[in-house]
Image (tube, rainbow, N blue to C red):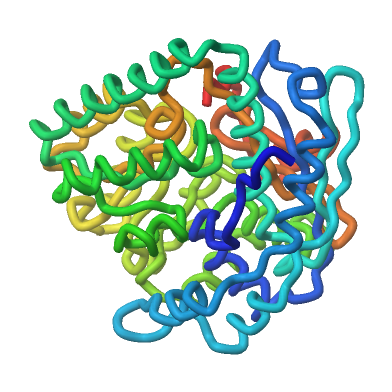
Amino acid sequence: MDRPIITSMLDLDFYKFTMALLAWKQYRYVPVRYGFTNRSKGVHLGLELDLGELREQLEHVRTLRPTKTELHYLRGTNEYGGRMFPEEFLEFFADNQVPDFELEQIGDDIRLEFPGDWPKAIWWETLALSIINELYFRKQMAGLSRFEQEAVMAEGIRRLHGKIKVLKGRPDITFSDFGTRRRFSKEWQWRVIEALTEELPGSFLGTSNVEAAMNFGLLPMGTSAHEKDMIMTGIMHGNDDEIRESLNVTMDDWWNLFGQGLSIALTDTFGTNYFFKAMTQQHAQDWKGLRHDSGAPIPFSNKAIKFYEGHGVDPREKLLVFSDGLDLPTMIKIADHCAEKIKHSYGWGTNLTNDLGFRALSLVIKAIEANGHGLVKLSDNLAKATGSPEDVEHFKRIFGHKVTTREECVY
Protein backbone atom coordinates (compact mmCIF):
# COMPACT_ATOMS: atom_id res chain seq x y z
CA MET A 1 0.00 0.00 0.00
CA ASP A 2 1.43 3.37 -1.07
CA ARG A 3 -0.04 5.37 1.83
CA PRO A 4 -3.39 5.03 3.59
CA ILE A 5 -6.18 7.24 2.29
CA ILE A 6 -8.44 6.88 5.31
CA THR A 7 -6.62 7.55 8.58
CA SER A 8 -9.59 8.42 10.80
CA MET A 9 -13.01 6.88 11.34
CA LEU A 10 -14.35 10.42 11.34
CA ASP A 11 -13.33 10.92 7.70
CA LEU A 12 -16.89 10.33 6.54
CA ASP A 13 -20.17 12.18 6.18
CA PHE A 14 -22.09 13.25 9.28
CA TYR A 15 -25.28 11.53 8.13
CA LYS A 16 -23.54 8.21 8.72
CA PHE A 17 -23.55 9.02 12.45
CA THR A 18 -27.15 10.21 12.61
CA MET A 19 -28.51 7.24 10.65
CA ALA A 20 -26.26 4.84 12.57
CA LEU A 21 -27.77 6.09 15.82
CA LEU A 22 -31.26 5.34 14.52
CA ALA A 23 -30.18 1.89 13.33
CA TRP A 24 -28.39 1.14 16.62
CA LYS A 25 -31.35 2.21 18.76
CA GLN A 26 -34.17 0.57 16.84
CA TYR A 27 -32.93 -1.84 14.16
CA ARG A 28 -29.71 -3.14 15.65
CA TYR A 29 -29.72 -6.63 14.18
CA VAL A 30 -31.28 -6.00 10.77
CA PRO A 31 -28.97 -7.64 8.19
CA VAL A 32 -28.21 -5.37 5.25
CA ARG A 33 -25.98 -5.35 2.21
CA TYR A 34 -24.47 -2.32 0.49
CA GLY A 35 -23.31 -2.43 -3.12
CA PHE A 36 -21.00 -0.26 -5.22
CA THR A 37 -22.09 1.10 -8.62
CA ASN A 38 -20.02 2.98 -11.17
CA ARG A 39 -22.36 5.24 -13.17
CA SER A 40 -19.56 6.79 -15.27
CA LYS A 41 -19.92 5.62 -18.84
CA GLY A 42 -16.71 4.50 -20.49
CA VAL A 43 -14.75 4.26 -17.22
CA HIS A 44 -13.86 0.64 -16.39
CA LEU A 45 -12.54 0.49 -12.88
CA GLY A 46 -11.54 -3.15 -13.17
CA LEU A 47 -8.89 -1.95 -15.63
CA GLU A 48 -8.13 1.41 -14.03
CA LEU A 49 -7.57 0.30 -10.43
CA ASP A 50 -5.04 -2.00 -8.82
CA LEU A 51 -7.41 -4.31 -6.96
CA GLY A 52 -4.62 -5.39 -4.64
CA GLU A 53 -4.08 -1.78 -3.59
CA LEU A 54 -7.84 -1.25 -3.23
CA ARG A 55 -8.10 -4.34 -1.04
CA GLU A 56 -5.24 -3.14 1.17
CA GLN A 57 -6.82 0.29 1.57
CA LEU A 58 -10.15 -1.28 2.55
CA GLU A 59 -8.46 -3.69 4.95
CA HIS A 60 -6.67 -0.76 6.56
CA VAL A 61 -10.03 0.84 7.37
CA ARG A 62 -10.95 -2.29 9.33
CA THR A 63 -8.01 -1.64 11.67
CA LEU A 64 -9.11 1.90 12.54
CA ARG A 65 -10.82 2.96 15.75
CA PRO A 66 -11.70 6.49 16.91
CA THR A 67 -9.19 8.20 19.16
CA LYS A 68 -9.99 9.63 22.58
CA THR A 69 -9.84 13.11 21.06
CA GLU A 70 -12.35 12.15 18.37
CA LEU A 71 -14.72 10.58 20.89
CA HIS A 72 -14.47 13.71 23.03
CA TYR A 73 -15.44 15.77 19.99
CA LEU A 74 -18.45 13.54 19.28
CA ARG A 75 -19.56 13.88 22.90
CA GLY A 76 -19.63 17.61 22.38
CA THR A 77 -21.83 17.37 19.29
CA ASN A 78 -25.17 18.64 20.46
CA GLU A 79 -28.58 19.71 19.33
CA TYR A 80 -30.20 22.63 21.17
CA GLY A 81 -27.91 22.18 24.15
CA GLY A 82 -28.44 18.44 24.54
CA ARG A 83 -26.01 15.68 23.64
CA MET A 84 -26.85 14.11 20.31
CA PHE A 85 -25.03 10.81 20.76
CA PRO A 86 -25.56 8.73 23.94
CA GLU A 87 -22.48 7.35 25.64
CA GLU A 88 -23.58 3.77 24.95
CA PHE A 89 -23.69 4.53 21.23
CA LEU A 90 -20.22 6.09 21.32
CA GLU A 91 -18.93 3.00 23.11
CA PHE A 92 -20.41 0.88 20.34
CA PHE A 93 -18.77 3.09 17.72
CA ALA A 94 -15.43 2.97 19.52
CA ASP A 95 -15.43 -0.83 19.60
CA ASN A 96 -16.94 -1.51 16.19
CA GLN A 97 -14.82 -3.03 13.46
CA VAL A 98 -16.50 -2.41 10.15
CA PRO A 99 -17.53 -5.77 8.66
CA ASP A 100 -15.56 -7.57 5.99
CA PHE A 101 -16.19 -6.78 2.33
CA GLU A 102 -16.51 -8.73 -0.91
CA LEU A 103 -14.31 -7.54 -3.78
CA GLU A 104 -13.75 -9.12 -7.17
CA GLN A 105 -13.10 -8.15 -10.76
CA ILE A 106 -15.90 -8.96 -13.17
CA GLY A 107 -14.83 -8.33 -16.73
CA ASP A 108 -13.64 -4.76 -16.99
CA ASP A 109 -15.40 -3.68 -13.81
CA ILE A 110 -15.51 -4.55 -10.13
CA ARG A 111 -18.04 -5.94 -7.71
CA LEU A 112 -17.72 -4.49 -4.23
CA GLU A 113 -20.29 -5.25 -1.53
CA PHE A 114 -20.52 -4.80 2.23
CA PRO A 115 -22.79 -7.18 4.19
CA GLY A 116 -23.45 -6.89 7.92
CA ASP A 117 -25.87 -5.70 10.58
CA TRP A 118 -27.10 -2.23 9.72
CA PRO A 119 -25.37 -0.18 12.47
CA LYS A 120 -22.09 -2.02 11.84
CA ALA A 121 -21.98 -1.89 8.04
CA ILE A 122 -23.40 1.61 7.59
CA TRP A 123 -19.99 3.30 7.89
CA TRP A 124 -18.55 1.82 4.70
CA GLU A 125 -20.29 4.06 2.13
CA THR A 126 -18.31 7.30 2.22
CA LEU A 127 -15.11 5.60 3.39
CA ALA A 128 -15.00 3.24 0.40
CA LEU A 129 -16.06 5.89 -2.12
CA SER A 130 -13.29 8.22 -0.94
CA ILE A 131 -10.77 5.40 -1.36
CA ILE A 132 -11.88 4.47 -4.87
CA ASN A 133 -11.92 8.08 -6.05
CA GLU A 134 -8.50 8.90 -4.67
CA LEU A 135 -6.91 5.72 -6.05
CA TYR A 136 -8.34 6.55 -9.47
CA PHE A 137 -7.04 10.13 -9.45
CA ARG A 138 -3.68 9.11 -8.02
CA LYS A 139 -3.30 7.00 -11.13
CA GLN A 140 -4.29 9.89 -13.40
CA MET A 141 -1.71 12.12 -11.72
CA ALA A 142 0.98 9.43 -11.81
CA GLY A 143 0.83 9.49 -15.61
CA LEU A 144 1.81 13.17 -15.68
CA SER A 145 5.15 14.88 -15.37
CA ARG A 146 5.86 16.95 -12.26
CA PHE A 147 5.21 20.15 -14.21
CA GLU A 148 1.88 18.79 -15.48
CA GLN A 149 0.91 17.79 -11.95
CA GLU A 150 1.65 21.32 -10.75
CA ALA A 151 -0.48 22.65 -13.61
CA VAL A 152 -3.42 20.49 -12.46
CA MET A 153 -3.24 21.88 -8.94
CA ALA A 154 -2.89 25.43 -10.28
CA GLU A 155 -5.99 24.91 -12.41
CA GLY A 156 -7.89 23.70 -9.36
CA ILE A 157 -6.87 26.83 -7.46
CA ARG A 158 -7.82 29.04 -10.40
CA ARG A 159 -11.28 27.50 -10.61
CA LEU A 160 -11.82 27.68 -6.86
CA HIS A 161 -10.72 31.32 -6.82
CA GLY A 162 -13.23 32.09 -9.55
CA LYS A 163 -16.06 30.54 -7.56
CA ILE A 164 -15.08 32.40 -4.41
CA LYS A 165 -14.92 35.69 -6.30
CA VAL A 166 -18.46 35.23 -7.61
CA LEU A 167 -19.82 34.11 -4.25
CA LYS A 168 -18.44 37.17 -2.50
CA GLY A 169 -20.95 39.11 -4.56
CA ARG A 170 -23.81 36.72 -3.76
CA PRO A 171 -24.32 36.76 0.03
CA ASP A 172 -27.77 35.26 -0.55
CA ILE A 173 -26.14 31.93 -1.48
CA THR A 174 -25.19 29.90 1.58
CA PHE A 175 -23.75 26.42 1.16
CA SER A 176 -22.02 23.48 2.79
CA ASP A 177 -19.33 21.12 1.54
CA PHE A 178 -20.93 17.79 0.60
CA GLY A 179 -17.95 16.61 -1.45
CA THR A 180 -16.32 13.86 0.63
CA ARG A 181 -17.63 10.91 -1.38
CA ARG A 182 -16.27 12.07 -4.73
CA ARG A 183 -13.36 14.29 -3.79
CA PHE A 184 -10.17 14.44 -5.82
CA SER A 185 -8.24 13.66 -2.66
CA LYS A 186 -8.48 14.26 1.06
CA GLU A 187 -5.64 16.77 0.84
CA TRP A 188 -7.46 18.76 -1.84
CA GLN A 189 -10.78 18.69 -0.02
CA TRP A 190 -9.13 20.12 3.08
CA ARG A 191 -7.42 22.79 1.01
CA VAL A 192 -10.81 23.80 -0.40
CA ILE A 193 -12.38 23.88 3.07
CA GLU A 194 -9.55 26.01 4.41
CA ALA A 195 -9.95 28.52 1.58
CA LEU A 196 -13.73 28.71 1.97
CA THR A 197 -13.43 29.16 5.75
CA GLU A 198 -11.06 32.09 5.29
CA GLU A 199 -12.66 33.72 2.25
CA LEU A 200 -16.41 33.16 2.72
CA PRO A 201 -17.12 33.13 6.47
CA GLY A 202 -20.66 34.37 5.99
CA SER A 203 -21.63 32.05 3.16
CA PHE A 204 -19.78 28.81 3.95
CA LEU A 205 -21.86 27.06 6.60
CA GLY A 206 -19.78 23.94 7.24
CA THR A 207 -18.87 20.53 5.91
CA SER A 208 -20.43 17.08 5.94
CA ASN A 209 -16.98 15.61 6.68
CA VAL A 210 -16.82 15.04 10.42
CA GLU A 211 -13.02 14.94 10.68
CA ALA A 212 -12.68 18.18 8.73
CA ALA A 213 -15.40 19.83 10.83
CA MET A 214 -13.50 18.90 13.97
CA ASN A 215 -10.17 20.16 12.65
CA PHE A 216 -11.45 23.44 11.19
CA GLY A 217 -13.93 24.26 13.95
CA LEU A 218 -16.90 24.04 11.59
CA LEU A 219 -20.40 22.66 11.95
CA PRO A 220 -20.75 19.03 10.80
CA MET A 221 -23.57 19.19 8.27
CA GLY A 222 -26.10 16.55 7.23
CA THR A 223 -29.25 14.71 8.21
CA SER A 224 -30.11 11.45 6.43
CA ALA A 225 -29.78 9.69 3.08
CA HIS A 226 -31.88 7.46 0.83
CA GLU A 227 -30.74 4.31 2.61
CA LYS A 228 -32.93 5.07 5.64
CA ASP A 229 -36.12 4.93 3.58
CA MET A 230 -34.86 2.08 1.42
CA ILE A 231 -33.92 -0.19 4.32
CA MET A 232 -37.25 0.38 6.03
CA THR A 233 -38.99 -1.21 3.04
CA GLY A 234 -36.94 -4.35 3.75
CA ILE A 235 -38.00 -4.23 7.39
CA MET A 236 -41.67 -3.59 6.55
CA HIS A 237 -41.99 -6.01 3.66
CA GLY A 238 -45.17 -7.90 4.56
CA ASN A 239 -47.21 -6.51 1.68
CA ASP A 240 -47.46 -3.54 -0.66
CA ASP A 241 -49.40 -1.45 1.88
CA GLU A 242 -46.65 -1.93 4.48
CA ILE A 243 -43.99 -0.96 1.97
CA ARG A 244 -45.96 2.15 1.09
CA GLU A 245 -46.49 3.02 4.76
CA SER A 246 -42.78 2.59 5.55
CA LEU A 247 -42.02 6.12 4.37
CA ASN A 248 -44.13 7.69 7.09
CA VAL A 249 -42.71 5.26 9.65
CA THR A 250 -39.18 6.47 8.90
CA MET A 251 -40.30 10.09 9.16
CA ASP A 252 -41.84 9.41 12.56
CA ASP A 253 -38.77 7.46 13.70
CA TRP A 254 -36.56 10.38 12.69
CA TRP A 255 -38.70 13.02 14.36
CA ASN A 256 -38.93 11.03 17.57
CA LEU A 257 -35.14 10.71 17.68
CA PHE A 258 -33.98 14.16 16.54
CA GLY A 259 -37.00 16.46 16.58
CA GLN A 260 -36.92 19.64 14.54
CA GLY A 261 -33.15 19.96 14.66
CA LEU A 262 -32.49 17.50 11.82
CA SER A 263 -35.90 17.66 10.17
CA ILE A 264 -34.88 18.13 6.55
CA ALA A 265 -36.77 15.49 4.57
CA LEU A 266 -35.23 13.83 1.52
CA THR A 267 -38.06 13.70 -0.98
CA ASP A 268 -37.09 11.54 -3.94
CA THR A 269 -36.36 8.01 -2.68
CA PHE A 270 -39.61 6.74 -4.19
CA GLY A 271 -40.43 9.81 -6.25
CA THR A 272 -41.23 13.32 -5.10
CA ASN A 273 -44.81 13.11 -6.34
CA TYR A 274 -45.58 10.31 -3.90
CA PHE A 275 -43.67 12.04 -1.11
CA PHE A 276 -45.85 15.13 -1.33
CA LYS A 277 -48.94 12.91 -1.15
CA ALA A 278 -47.62 11.03 1.88
CA MET A 279 -46.28 14.02 3.84
CA THR A 280 -49.03 15.16 6.18
CA GLN A 281 -50.07 18.64 7.17
CA GLN A 282 -48.45 18.05 10.55
CA HIS A 283 -45.19 17.11 8.82
CA ALA A 284 -45.43 20.22 6.66
CA GLN A 285 -45.87 22.42 9.72
CA ASP A 286 -43.26 20.78 11.95
CA TRP A 287 -40.36 19.84 9.68
CA LYS A 288 -37.86 22.57 8.81
CA GLY A 289 -37.70 21.77 5.12
CA LEU A 290 -36.82 19.48 2.26
CA ARG A 291 -33.73 18.29 0.41
CA HIS A 292 -33.69 18.06 -3.39
CA ASP A 293 -31.43 15.36 -4.86
CA SER A 294 -32.73 14.53 -8.33
CA GLY A 295 -34.84 15.96 -11.12
CA ALA A 296 -35.08 19.56 -12.29
CA PRO A 297 -34.53 21.94 -9.33
CA ILE A 298 -36.76 24.84 -10.44
CA PRO A 299 -39.91 22.72 -10.97
CA PHE A 300 -39.15 21.05 -7.63
CA SER A 301 -39.04 24.39 -5.84
CA ASN A 302 -42.35 25.37 -7.42
CA LYS A 303 -43.87 22.07 -6.34
CA ALA A 304 -42.58 22.53 -2.79
CA ILE A 305 -43.97 26.06 -2.55
CA LYS A 306 -47.36 24.88 -3.80
CA PHE A 307 -47.27 21.99 -1.33
CA TYR A 308 -46.67 24.28 1.63
CA GLU A 309 -49.27 26.79 0.52
CA GLY A 310 -51.78 23.95 0.09
CA HIS A 311 -51.29 23.07 3.76
CA GLY A 312 -51.61 26.66 4.94
CA VAL A 313 -47.88 26.96 5.67
CA ASP A 314 -45.93 30.06 4.67
CA PRO A 315 -43.15 28.70 2.39
CA ARG A 316 -40.95 31.67 3.31
CA GLU A 317 -40.55 30.02 6.73
CA LYS A 318 -39.30 26.74 5.20
CA LEU A 319 -35.93 25.71 3.79
CA LEU A 320 -35.02 23.89 0.59
CA VAL A 321 -31.57 22.29 0.49
CA PHE A 322 -30.40 21.54 -3.05
CA SER A 323 -27.76 18.82 -3.46
CA ASP A 324 -28.02 17.31 -6.94
CA GLY A 325 -24.88 17.69 -9.07
CA LEU A 326 -24.55 21.40 -8.37
CA ASP A 327 -22.29 23.90 -10.06
CA LEU A 328 -22.21 27.64 -9.45
CA PRO A 329 -24.36 28.72 -12.44
CA THR A 330 -27.07 26.27 -11.34
CA MET A 331 -26.95 27.56 -7.77
CA ILE A 332 -27.28 31.15 -8.98
CA LYS A 333 -30.25 30.24 -11.16
CA ILE A 334 -31.98 28.49 -8.25
CA ALA A 335 -31.23 31.35 -5.85
CA ASP A 336 -32.66 33.93 -8.24
CA HIS A 337 -35.81 31.84 -8.69
CA CYS A 338 -36.35 31.17 -4.97
CA ALA A 339 -35.66 34.71 -3.79
CA GLU A 340 -38.44 36.04 -1.53
CA LYS A 341 -40.41 32.79 -2.08
CA ILE A 342 -38.70 30.20 0.11
CA LYS A 343 -35.43 29.82 2.03
CA HIS A 344 -32.70 28.02 0.12
CA SER A 345 -29.26 26.59 0.75
CA TYR A 346 -26.92 24.20 -1.05
CA GLY A 347 -25.02 20.99 -0.37
CA TRP A 348 -22.20 21.42 -2.89
CA GLY A 349 -20.39 18.21 -3.73
CA THR A 350 -18.30 16.98 -6.61
CA ASN A 351 -17.96 20.28 -8.47
CA LEU A 352 -16.58 21.83 -5.28
CA THR A 353 -14.04 19.18 -4.22
CA ASN A 354 -13.14 17.62 -7.57
CA ASP A 355 -12.89 20.41 -10.15
CA LEU A 356 -9.29 20.44 -11.34
CA GLY A 357 -9.70 19.60 -15.01
CA PHE A 358 -10.13 15.82 -14.86
CA ARG A 359 -13.47 14.22 -15.58
CA ALA A 360 -15.12 13.51 -12.22
CA LEU A 361 -16.61 10.09 -11.62
CA SER A 362 -20.21 9.29 -10.69
CA LEU A 363 -19.85 6.53 -8.10
CA VAL A 364 -22.36 5.43 -5.48
CA ILE A 365 -22.67 2.85 -2.74
CA LYS A 366 -26.29 2.14 -1.91
CA ALA A 367 -28.14 -0.26 0.36
CA ILE A 368 -29.16 -3.10 -1.94
CA GLU A 369 -30.67 -5.62 0.49
CA ALA A 370 -32.27 -5.66 3.96
CA ASN A 371 -33.78 -8.61 5.81
CA GLY A 372 -33.18 -10.66 2.68
CA HIS A 373 -35.29 -8.36 0.49
CA GLY A 374 -33.97 -6.46 -2.51
CA LEU A 375 -34.09 -2.68 -2.09
CA VAL A 376 -35.02 0.04 -4.55
CA LYS A 377 -34.44 3.74 -5.00
CA LEU A 378 -36.63 5.23 -7.72
CA SER A 379 -35.51 8.88 -7.79
CA ASP A 380 -36.89 11.67 -9.98
CA ASN A 381 -34.23 10.76 -12.54
CA LEU A 382 -34.41 7.11 -13.53
CA ALA A 383 -30.70 7.11 -14.35
CA LYS A 384 -30.24 7.26 -10.57
CA ALA A 385 -32.64 4.39 -9.87
CA THR A 386 -31.20 1.33 -8.14
CA GLY A 387 -32.50 -2.20 -7.66
CA SER A 388 -33.23 -5.19 -9.83
CA PRO A 389 -35.44 -4.49 -12.87
CA GLU A 390 -38.21 -6.60 -11.34
CA ASP A 391 -38.07 -4.81 -7.99
CA VAL A 392 -37.92 -1.39 -9.67
CA GLU A 393 -41.09 -2.12 -11.64
CA HIS A 394 -42.79 -3.47 -8.51
CA PHE A 395 -41.94 -0.36 -6.50
CA LYS A 396 -43.02 1.92 -9.35
CA ARG A 397 -46.45 0.31 -9.11
CA ILE A 398 -46.54 0.56 -5.31
CA PHE A 399 -45.66 4.26 -5.26
CA GLY A 400 -47.42 5.28 -8.47
CA HIS A 401 -44.10 6.37 -9.93
CA LYS A 402 -44.61 7.60 -13.50
CA VAL A 403 -41.51 9.75 -13.97
CA THR A 404 -39.74 8.99 -17.26
CA THR A 405 -36.85 11.47 -17.00
CA ARG A 406 -33.49 9.76 -17.54
CA GLU A 407 -30.49 12.08 -17.54
CA GLU A 408 -26.89 10.85 -17.40
CA CYS A 409 -25.33 11.27 -13.94
CA VAL A 410 -22.30 13.50 -14.51
CA TYR A 411 -21.37 13.59 -10.81
